[in-house]
Image (cartoon, rainbow, N blue to C red):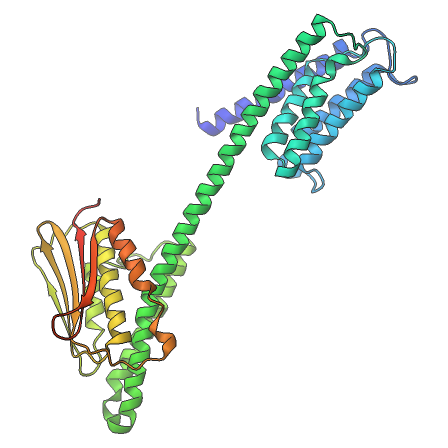
Amino acid sequence: MKPASARGCARGLAVGVLLAASVIDVVLYAGADGSSVLPTADPVWQTLAVVLIGLAAVLWPAGRRPEWLTPQVRTGVPALASILLTAASLLVEGPVVFGPGEIMILLSLLFIAVRHCPSPWALVCGVLDAVALLTLPVRGDVTLSSDLMGLEMIGLLLVGLVGGLAGYLRSMDYRRTVAVSETRRGERLAIAADLHDFVAHHVTGILVQTQVARMMATTQPQDLDPVLAGIERAATEALASMRRTVGVLRDTPSEAGHRPVGDLAGIAELTEGFATPGQQVVLHLDPALPDDLPHEVQAAAFRVVQEALTNIRRHAADATRIEVGLRDATGRLEVTVTDDGRGSTQLPAAAHGGGFGLVGLKERVTALGGELATGPRGGVGWEVRAVLPSRKP
C-alpha cells in the first residue's frame, strides 16, 4: 500500500472511531438519569450541542474552512462550551454524564492547539482544552472520591501524552522549516555568487573595451569594428548568463544540447574571447588531465579562471600577455592564471568591486578540499594559483 493510501485509511479509521464514540455519548450516556442542566432543556440536546460543536471543529475540511475559523477558534470555542456545560451541571441535582466522544474530541483539539495554533495562542487554547477534559469527571459530582481521583489521574496522563506528542511534532515542523529556509538561503547565495561571477566578468569586459573604443575613435577609427564586436559579444554572453540563472530559479529545464555552464571547455571559450587589442591570452592545457573530472571540480576551476581574468580587466588591463594553465599535479588539478600587468588600469571607482570575489572563490575552493593562493609574481604582474582534488572529497 502506498504511503498516501495508508495515511488516508488511517485518517478514515480515526474519523470513524470519533463519530462512533460521539454517537455513544448521545445515545447511551446523555440524560441517562433524566436530569437537565436547563429547566426546559433535554440533556440529550445539551450533550449533542457540545459534541456537534467539537466534531465540526475537528472534522471541518481544511479547503472549505472560512477565514474566521482559525486554529484558535477551532480549539477554543468547543473547550469553552464544554467548560460552561460542566459549570452549569454543578447547579443541578444529579450528574450530567459525559462519554468517550467528548473525551476524544477534547484530546483531538488539544493536539491541534499545541501543534497548529500561533505561539501566543497555543498555550491558551491548549490549557482550555486540558481544563475542559480534566473537569469532565466533576459534572454534578464534586465529591473527592477515589474514583474521581483515579479519573483525574487518567486525564492528566492523556493530556501529557497528547500534549507531548503534539509539542514534539511542532518542534519537528519548526526544525524542518528552519532547515528548508537555510537551504533556500544557501541556494540563493550560490545563485547570487554565480550571477555576480558571470555578469561582473562580462560587464567589466564591456567597460574596458568601451574605454579602448573611445580612445581609438580619434586615433584609429578604422580599427574600431573588432572592439565593437567584442563589446557586442560580451553583452550577449551577459544576457545569456542572466537567462540561464533565471531559468534555474524558475526550474525550467535547459535546452537540449546545451552544455552545463562552468567546465573545462568553458575555460577555453573564456580565454578565446578575452583579449583586447594589444593583448595575448595563452591557454596551456595538460593532455594528461582525465576526461572524467567531477563537474564540481570543473566548475570551481572555471570560476578561478573567470575571477582571475575579471580582476585583470579591473586592475591590470595594461597586461600584454596572460597565461592560463591547467595541468595534472600528482592526482590533483592545478589551475594558474598569470599576467604581466603593472596595475595602471583607470576604471571608475564603482567598477573596482568590493573584494568579495576572491573571498567567495576561496570558500568555493576550500569547500572542495583545495587550496587557493594569490599574489605578485617575481618580476611584474600577478598570479592566481588553485589546487583542486581530481575527485569529490
